[in-house]
Length: 381
Ligand SMILES: Nc1ncnc2c1ncn2[C@@H]1O[C@H](COP(=O)(O)OP(=O)(O)OP(=O)(O)O)[C@@H](O)[C@H]1O
Ligand SMILES: [Mg+2]
Image (tube, rainbow, N blue to C red; front, side, top):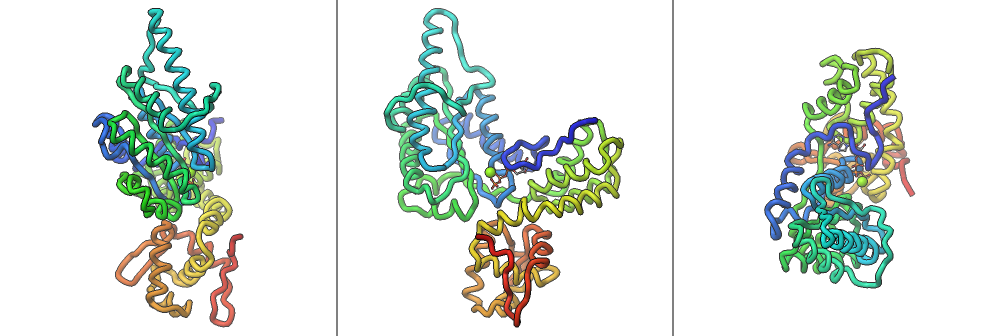
């Protein structure tokens, strides 16, 4: 039996990445364009499961193909130190070794494929990030290549370190060093970072919000892995599965996995496999998608979503405000925060809707209305 090709796991590359070609090209062009290209500082934002980590994986791949060196980090405490004391020294050790080989006539370069130092083992040297980056980029001039640093899960909690990081990268850019930087984070965690007075450099970075993927791309992301793995899916069934994802990348994988699972030994995935698969996938979405997403926002914002879930379609802002007993002005602030968090979108003047239609059902099942007051029973934390 063929292995199920779908990957509903955070951070794991999908069998087929769709809808991001433009972004990938933008990034690749920035490497070719040389120091000063704006895409050499790029930030991807998006709600949970929209594919931020996978985008960072992709730009790393692109950089490596171009012979660049890649360092991959997460913005957890101490990340600048890890860059300065582990990643960059490890690269330096390698570069020095390569240089020695070349002197003895064995020659090197990184060539296509590049190299990554995710788990550096070199002995660490007490030093600072800026001097290490300068040393590395000075040597890389010889090889006509550069270094890409990716930082996942950017969060304002790490603002001090991000300032230090940003100042060094900015300095490297000014000196026309071959450095590129790509970061990712939830919009609500990234916004305060971008508004920081000291981090003007990050504000100028290219910022892309990873949203939904178009229906035809979703169909391709479902069909191609199925066919590549020796099975097939009816056209109508594939459309139905794609529609159920709402274009949300994580659901492409989750629904894909469940529709494949129904009758894995059969050649064809039928409409009834899709219907059953969607039902089964829905049962998992609460804990995999909605609970973490709701935990990321404040309890007042959750109450706003619960109030929206009473409507069958888009909600009128005026209705929501009266349900919550708040002024239009106050309601407008919730609205902005939730749009930024990627949870809701504006559908028409004075109207909002869920980005993920199934979230309405999920909240509707959990909200209890007590004496006209909406009580949010999803209260995380
Ligand atoms: N463009 C895409 N096409 C198909 N599948 C995708 C795409 N982008 C992401 N995925 C799949 O969606 C899931 C979530 O991706 P990823 O872990 O990158 O999301 P994320 O935005 O980093 O989430 P989090 O905020 O929780 O870190 C993974 O299973 C991944 O394979
Ligand atoms: Mg991620």
